[in-house]
Length: 288
Image (cartoon, rainbow, N blue to C red):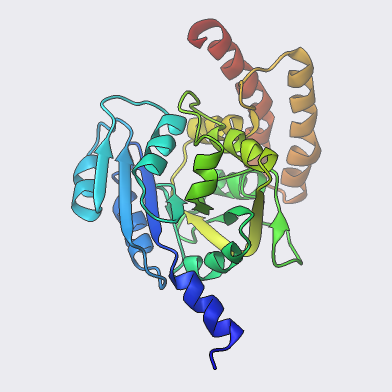
């Protein structure tokens, strides 16, 4: 007699999996990222790389290491590229991985078991700095973007914000709510996650599931990343929002930096609200 656990494992093995890696000028990390996906203990049926108008050698690397490769003629943005990835995928589940992140070999084995619940649309974990990435900026993003010091007791946590830096998703759920919004250049994850939850689906965060960033951010790129993660879908920031952001930069951000005697990081925290406000005003007057 076949036991329940065996039947369940057989059912999970029936899921076909497509790995989707969007990239833009990531020739320094793309090969390493693809290798981490290929090395998964759980079988991956196809790997898709979608290049969003790169000017470096990303396309050459992607063509040689992927099953399917697509290239946008120009930079179309995150929403467009992720929507195209979903449209191109054939797997029941889609493993999204950014082209600057690497996955442990057991990532899929840990994530896939949560999809026995048909209401689960996405399973993601934490993101940490890779041990090879050190310095002031990685230290700051680890504390304030990745929140590496936070501890979790539960195995799984319902979350309200979708992320796709390293996430396993159910393709049918994405399609039923209308796929990613191709017009969005940031916050496309958050917007899709909101529609998934409104459609009755759940998003899970698994603390033991970790994605490792091998991206070497500059001061400008990490400030841009903070703004993109926290600026909201419309990217607008009025004066009340600006003042709230300034307050938040002091408590808890600068407060945490000073507690760690990390004075260089405190300067980055101080710059965040001002960069965000200037970025929002630039978009308001020159982009939209």
